Structure formats: structure tokens, C-alpha cells
Length: 268
Image 1 (cartoon, rainbow, N blue to C red):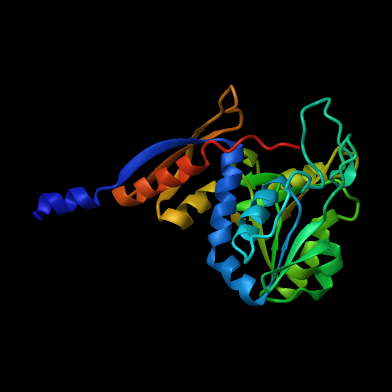
Image 2: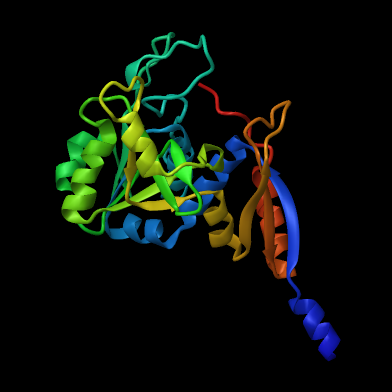
């Protein structure tokens, strides 16, 4: 192979892709299910997957890797959700049809301990264990996330932080790129949490932020960045990603993205 051929083989390839929020959730979930931190913890530690829409995909993908592939329904695997105006929702994931909240997913050494919630198991978590918790606001630049708070006692993140800060339990925050915000999260929290403010509060939290960009990078080795956003006809909330790397890596990323591209919208 001549020098020109070597340079051509090593040249960076850049390709663009559109990812919908639903496809992003599936992509994040698949990457986390294969992540070394998760695989190691499944062997010897406890993992708590706190109920949430993105985490429903995460739980589904992780459980699918376990012996026997335990059956899991993510349809009601959430507490608070954002819905279009006029769609009724009540606390603890119970909708107008009365469907009940199934609890969080607690895995002890790869075994699903059913019918448990984070508040029931948090006192037993220790360094090396993992809590996976979704978020509502994303600062891509500084790799930070924040959570909307409706519970006056902080809800599930309040329970989680007892272990994360108090006992060095690892916090992983899967969050889709559609939740990116331009402002400083601390300043936003100061304003939303001030006396006299109305609506939900906001809490920036420490943890490992994991987006579609991280998912693509961890599974294929490419670099990915957001270059545009938006769409209609089912592409509302989508992002345009530019993926760059060696030709073989970009081809692998393309295959990965195509595999999740047709993921249907989240259903309640």
C-alpha cells in the first residue's frame, strides 16, 4: 500500500444522521446494557434502575442480557411525566385508566428483586453499587443534568443522593438530547427554587451524564455532536448528529443508528 493509500484509509469520515427521541432512548439503553460499569456491577453489586421513561428502555435492555431474559413491561415504568396539554396524569405513574406503578427495578448480583422501590433499598446500598436515574434538563457543554422536583421531600433523587453523596454509590444519568437547555443549571435552579416562584423546582445533580452522544461513542469509537435539531410528522424533538471517525467506525455507527431508527414513539 502506497503512502497515498495509507492516508486515504486513515482519513476522517463525517456523516450525518437524524435520531428521534424514541430512537435516542433505545440507543442509550443498548449502550448502557453493554457498558463495562454495568456489566461489572451485575456480577457482584446492586443496581437500582429508578422508574422513568428512558429508564424503561434501560431496564428492558439490561434485563434482556440476564439469564432467562426476565419479562419486563415498561409501559407504566415512570412516576412523573410530561404530557401534552389536556392529557390527565396523576402521581406515581397512575393514569386516568387506573393503571398502577410497578416499582423500580432492583438487581442484586444480576438477580431482579421484584416489587421494590429505591426508598426501600437505599439504606443497603454501598460504594460500588449503582443508581440509574433519569433527568429533565441537560447542559451538554458542561456534561451536567438537573431534575424537576415536584415532591417537597425531593422524591427519588432525595433518596438517591443519600447513597451517592453519603456512601459513594455511583449515579448514572441517562438523558436524551431533546432535554438540552441553554442556561446555567445552577442559575435556573436558583430562580425556580426561590420563594414565590410557581411550578416545579429544579435540582442539578452530580453524576455520570449519558446521552446519545456517549452511547454512539462507547459502542463504536466515533465522535458525535449535535449539529441541528427539530422536525415534523413524527420527527418533533429529533436531533441531527454529525458522526466522525475512521470509515469502519462510521459504518459501524451507521448500522447501529439504523437498527434503532424505526423505534416507535413511547406509549403510555
